[in-house]
Image (cartoon, rainbow over all chains, first blue to last red; front, side, top):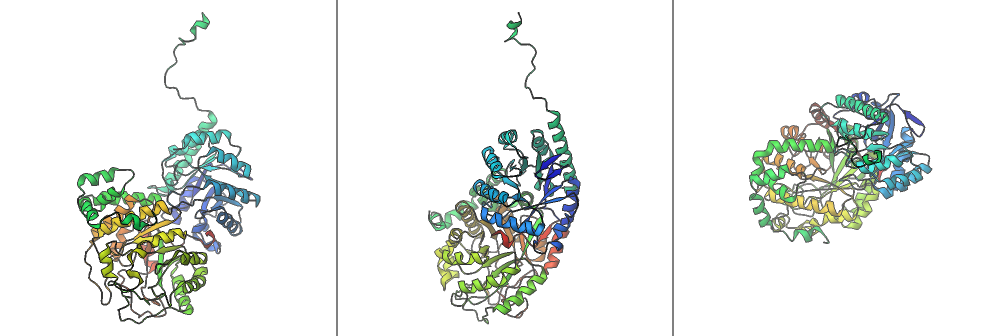
Length: 255
Length: 370
């Protein structure tokens, strides 16, 4: 079981709510994914009258935990303000911290993210920051009180897979908090690979929502994440590029 | 480089136009095969040589748009605040020399119009005015923003170009997006179409997006009025402008529009006709050139065209629009800026969107975010 802060999760597949062709289809796909943590952009929901919000009504299942995100903010100050509103309206102190001042590539701002994490952790939030695959930043975020780190696999929405794998491996090897690989995961095999290298979870949105059959794709991701995790726990055999038949360099030691 | 104008002045309209029309099949195929397309590729994609590749461009445009934006369309609606205007623009119903009854909505009238828009379900609004700096100025806009901010998640404005300090005054009141269309990048024709008023200053207008960038505006919209000049050359300069702005004002978002000249009372006949096929080509070319830019379609276009274009690259759409101040409730019979072509209600458009396998999104911003 995966534990983040005070919650345990039997599913290591986190999902998002954007880009679906209808909220009914989103609901069906999220159920098929088995996901227990679903991120919702504050800008998409009516946080004041959230009792009637169609998107939120679709997520009312006992197993689904909401993870509001701050997408749209450009600095730490705006992020902290948005997180406080989300906590009040949606009654959760979990927040996916997204600060991307660059609206073209949606690249996260490491400096503002660190500042906001410090402040939000101090205010009692469970912070899950979306960041570059930057091992030093991950350690600094740990010091700042983050509850997990969410490094990107490749640019968000790009479906390019684990372009940052060398850095992800360093992050995973030295992290004291769960590592959730967010952004860029384009196919179930990418998700499986992320789990095989030891990620604690993955977050997938575009690859499910924009696929030809989001419900079937969600189920495929569910299986891939489970398979990848199982493989990680079973300890993968190291890949070798050639057969080792004899030991010509050291055989003299046995003579 | 201080402004886009410095870059723009290094280009010649005629040479640019010639180079677009000189693009060949080979240029088009290279552009289509390239993973990251350049301005030269964009020229090829809008050139006559790309016409036989339209279906392929449409398939690629649809895929790129879905990847970035999902299967959704953002709904927005214009709210005309005033038709008072000191500019003469040959193509516009609100031109100073047009004999129309002038009107600027009062706070109470604005709230009546707002109530009607809320009833339709809108959360994103576009405020539109002419240019009358005596009556419709920064202080008027501040009052309007203060009044309507509690009712909308996202507020855009299409108003006279202003100075950085003016925009700086409006953003704290909830101004999120400003649209400023160049109309045409052909300087001589620009002068012909704007003989009088502040708008006749080409340089001040073409530098407006720079001033918006300096003011840190969240989003700005660019475009030309198609029909005034060769659309290919004008749209190349739009793409050049966009590329310049994205690099310089990297914290702003961008949207593009491609309004085709529409009839209005006493109006101008287009110098250049753009066919539906060519408009599709332009939309797909914009998308293939820039995966992140928002592309917007208004009620200027016909129902049949809009039904089909929404899946080919468009990201936002208006519906039920009125182009006269008070057009929704206060003074529905007053003269419009231009005739709209698609008169379906927002609910009908949302249903049309749903039947095509897309979702109409009413809210995609929140006052708490800035």
